[in-house]
Image (tube, rainbow, N blue to C red; front, top):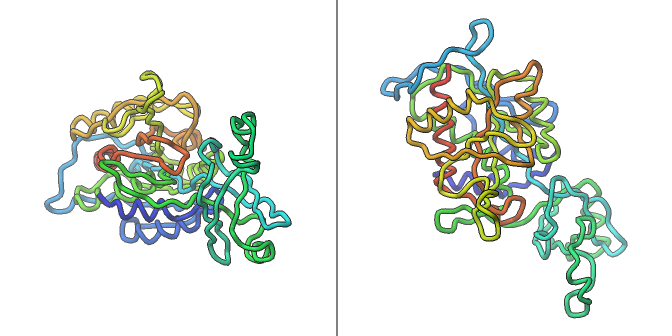
Length: 365
């Protein structure tokens, strides 16, 4: 498994609207895998791969499918993988040089205390720390200690003088958590697994397909999208442009198989395979596609679990609703501690998602 690629993806900063560093990394990785690569007006990277004949010695197709493309054209299958991670924009700098923030994405402030962060600017990146305003525990009262601060109460301390800060940092620069990816046991832990996991899958699934020599009858479009964490914005414009026949939203989902969560609310469990999306607050998967992916998973002996998420949404909804609409489904990876710096995935679940996507693309059309 190419964990080194996942590490580079996760450790590259890129908040909604500022995904350019992640996009540049992906552009280098996908060379030779696609026939056309372009960047749209919102910054999404649209990578298109035409149908391929099987190479000599390549694997045989698993299932015959009727083309779904219009006017006899091959079906167009779009994988949607958002590049952005939750983060902040610099909103103000006070007279002492402390930096205040505006969030880009949803945060649970219980997880923001005493964090190392990276302030990203055109002049360079600056390490800093984040804390909420207020008295330390030694001199605070019970009421203050028990209060959970709001996001707007957190600030960044760069360690620089006010003059230095104002020379180097300006309103509109962005801030991300500063934590490395690590491997522990069978797990990978990092910030930004939401959704660099999908970026990894978009690359590695096509790479697996290419290496197999199997060929594919569909046109494959992998869209590395922008601004998902603030409303599926990049996916909407990309999907309207691509107009897929089939859209597959690739993302992480909750894995609440941890203490304190009832079994009925776990959504997914680690080690049980990729999650086959049934519904969330943004879209309901096409059940024909659910059945197709399930059949491929069973035939290839790829472990999977079905999942329903009560709240939240993902890019598959944008593909489903673009232009005249498309059939859509979600392939997700159960992730513990989402939207923290300790997001955790199981490597076997990640491999399962990669393998089912590659196998499905091989047999569509």
